[in-house]
Length: 127
Image 1 (cartoon, one colour):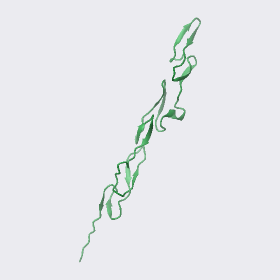
Image 2 (spheres, rainbow, N blue to C red):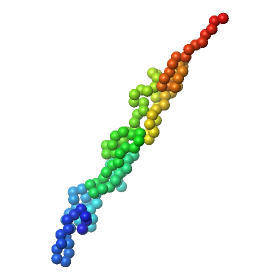
Image 3 (tube, one colour):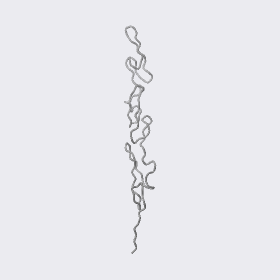
Image 4 (cartoon, rainbow, N blue to C red):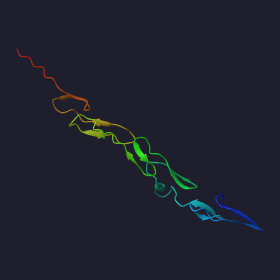
C-alpha cells in the first residue's frame, strides 16, 4: 500500500485505503499529488523553484531583485520608485536580478552625475 494510505491485513492479502484528498490514484497503485510542478511550474511564479511534496506543491521565494512571493507572484523591484534622479532627469531601472538605477545626464547648463546636478558657474572676466 502507498505510505499515505491505511493498510489492512485480510486473510491471504491486504486491502489498501483510498488516497488522501490532496492526491490522485489508489492506495494500491500509489498516490500522486493532484498538482505537480511539471505543469505550468505548479502555479508558482516562473522565476521561482517549485517542489512537489505530499501536500501538493511548494513554491520557493522570489530571487534577489524581486519582491513578492513565489505563490502570489514576483515583481521586479523598481529602482526608480523614489524618483532618485535630479528633477527633469530620466531614471532608468536596472532589471532584476540586479538592483538599482541609472540617471540620464544632467540638463544643459548643469554638471553632475544625474542624481546630483549643480548649475555650472560661469567664469567671466572683464578686461
